[in-house]
Length: 210
Image (cartoon, rainbow, N blue to C red; front, side, top):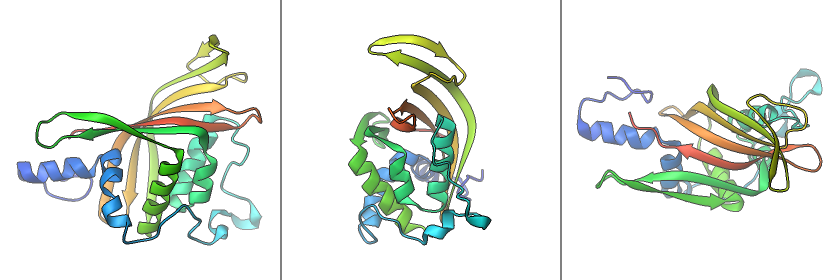
């Protein structure tokens, strides 16, 4: 069987190797061994003009008027390896949650990190690869809320004007360089700030087994 990474899975040993590769969260966990040899910190590592279209129009949606705008910018921040744009998409209380599997027992546990670690990790990740592509695929679930204090005033599965929180689950395909293609699911929680801009408050990456 041919995997997304183009490797023939003809043994249990190879299958286990591929399972480790196709988990975005697990990949980020082991990546520091590689990225310690490369750049560090969160910085813009390419010409700012990469995010511009002909005529000076930016491919980014700077108003962030909806969660869809945030996911649009998220995708292009990865494609253009733009860690500065990526930082603009994360809420000040952002948390990343991932599942850490155990190869020996078959069980695992959830772990997390906060915004500062996320920016450093992603900045290094984007520095390592000269080619990155991210595709949002199926929307698995979506819910939008208008919340005042601790009370949900309104809830709907489609976006509405007064919503200030949203939960959206997406499947994705992430390509890193020539050899890594990672497929997974991500659950996002978004929050709208007082300036009417949306940001990612929480991102839970789902471990997929194939």
